[in-house]
Image (tube, rainbow, N blue to C red; front, top):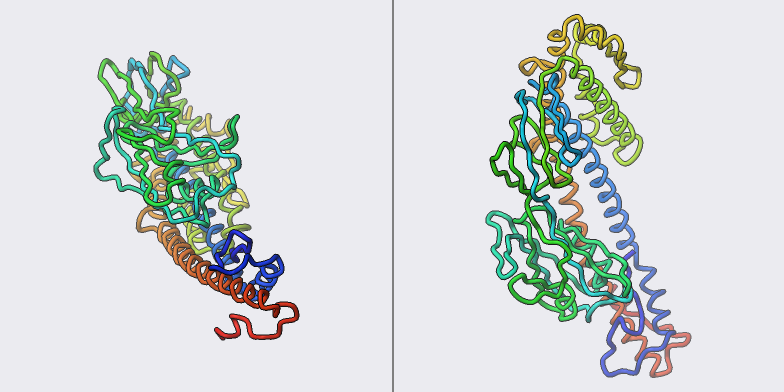
Length: 450
């Protein structure tokens, strides 16, 4: 609910005497009877937010599955990539080329983390509630200057009496796509703000408006710093066969053709990429496991947050079509793969290994074959469903617009209700001062507005 909170500090009453608790109690009752619009708006917002969250889960599930099947196309099905060091993990993809590569990780990528001064409570009001506009820019810094990144738009958000607490500010930053959370410290509670990893994602935060919010949040690498930097934004730095490589993330693609490196520690490693028919069995098992996990997620969403949803229905119907007709199903059965009643894939490892031993090329072509294999088709199908022109992308955009519209209506209604409640406090305070409040039968403000 977002009915205005009635209290001695919530509204001004001009030069009148401070209203009594009876005045506030009466205004609360009066406003509660006119809360139907607020209730409906809150219900609509909750419904759309739940749906948007579920659509995000669907997007993430499809993205994970797509990444796996794309890696199994081309040479990826029968390629293996191993590393001599735990701090460097390697996985082969479609364009992997056999060979041995010397990798030396000199620096890991990390995000900038900024922490505010401590507050006694995460829910205590900060400042007067006057509007404060917060602007967050992204760029590089050497500690003495700041260069905004080209092509990366700044983010803006508004802090006012509705969200001027640590919890409220964290929620507003998160909604604007900025990492934020309230953390407990020895002195109370603080706001932790973080950007994305990479040297080009350092933050500059400027605040116009309420002074207390400005004192809490503003951070200029070349000037005033009201936030304390806990860690600086930096790139991963490594060499591959002596060639220098820089990456904004610790997941590095392209340094070795067709291979993805996952960095977790500094140091040297030897990465070996090999073509091995025996790798087919492991990769097919990975595909089966990923498909079954995706199928379970689809069924869970169908029973819950996305019941009867159009986008989910299209995804659920489209993926099984990849298995094709009887001939394709029969070929998969010979390779030890059957389709269960609930849509899961059932894998007979012994039968699969026997088929690979007899004809590894034939088994490989079931999954990757110039765009006609199972992994090839899954990659294309998921791209069509979740890409910019796909049904899922369109539905996410539609729900996002609905939420924006509802938030706008909520802000307007909150403002109107607050104004009405303030007027009622003044009206009833005058009646109380005149001795007319007890048993008052005159018209209220809402009667006059009717």
